Length: 307
Image 1 (cartoon, rainbow, N blue to C red):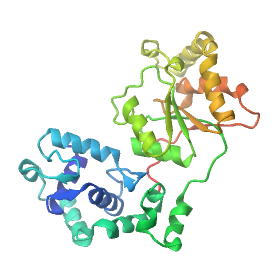
Image 2 (image 1 turned 180 degrees about the horizontal axis):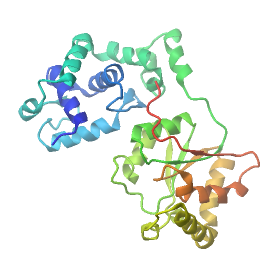
Image 3 (image 1 turned 120 degrees about the horizontal axis):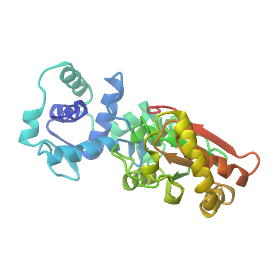
Image 4 (image 1 turned 30 degrees about the vertical axis):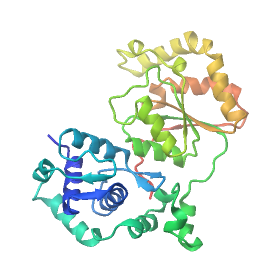
């Protein structure tokens, strides 16, 4: 059984003739999800060639494993089975066909330039910006879309309810330069949030990833948390028995902020900080930071993409 978003990939690729280069397909997918869908199926981050969806590539790998796409690092290409799996009727198919009649003949630099003009936020980290938009006036909207530089400080964030792309965009808007993972075991069944994938995602958007497992709480201590009182009891124990022995880790984070001028985000799973030990870590760090240090808890459930 395929997910609806995977059907979209197959349907869009079919309407484009059955194959497309990686860069072109990302730009078509970006345009389609922003112009033809009320709620975008895929979200994007500003990457080295413009808007990029990590999740679409995760689905590409799944479709390759199912024999619906060719195993090709340079292109998206349907197999015979993939062509058979494409839905030939329905509202999505009609939207895709209309979209491809409008944009399907555009490719390469003109297509990239179009996405940069329509969605300048996604071009803020482009390595080809000046060649795609050669004049200063053309690049002005991209420069205006760059999040302002923030002062050194500390924020906390959970990834519950967020896609990897929405989460990374939230970090970028907040001016985060270092993501500090405070999970004991940085594994997740949710795509993008296991250590390796999260670290690569951060690197791709210019954020340094650090993991301090000594600040985590063992998973067996997190069972049977049925009320806020249960959380409060766990965190009181954590502050008393764990944090008091983690001076070196706390000093390391404080040095990133004070000496290196970084804006650090502490991260774990839970959306709300009062249900996550990261708020305890932040409180323990407060006395180690300058008096006016900015400490904020980011609680947006799913901010979506900036555009």
